[in-house]
Structures are given as structure tokens and as C-alpha cells.
Image 1 (cartoon, rainbow, N blue to C red):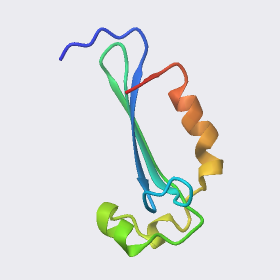
Image 2: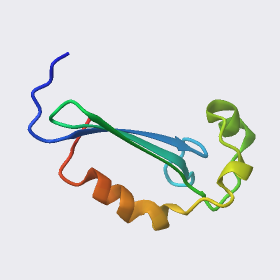
Image 3: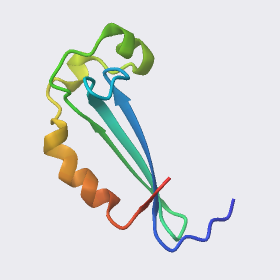
Image 4: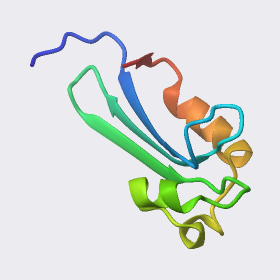
Length: 91
């Protein structure tokens, strides 16, 4: 596929502690940014959700409590993610 981009387009994938948007939290943010010149920039961050990850969620994405125990919280990475997404269209 040949895209004619004037701005980068970013595709975001989240892994979470569950599917309830009121209660559950992000444990991983992955972003693939396609640039107008067709190059790719990838950012992946583990995030400490501040709560235990249920076994059912671990079974889905494979991210364990031990893997995120020393990771930053979403509040600590939010500005970095925002800056990475600045001037991007979201796919």
C-alpha cells in the first residue's frame, strides 16, 4: 500500500488489567508511527498499573506483575506519550 501522508500516522495498542474502562489500568503502551517518508518509529512502554494484574489478563497478554513492578506509572509517562503523538493523525 502506498500512502500519501502529509503528517505521521500513529497506531496505538494498549494492554490492560482488564476491559472495564472505569476500573482497569494500562500495563503496556505500544505505538507504531508511520512517517510521511514511509519510515517507522516504534515506542513501547511497560506501565505500572498501581494494582495487581489479574491472572486472566496475564493469560491474554503475558505481562506479569513482576514485569511492571519497577515500571513508571501512566502519570509518569503520559507527557512522553503525548509528545510522541504530537502532530500525528491516529489510526
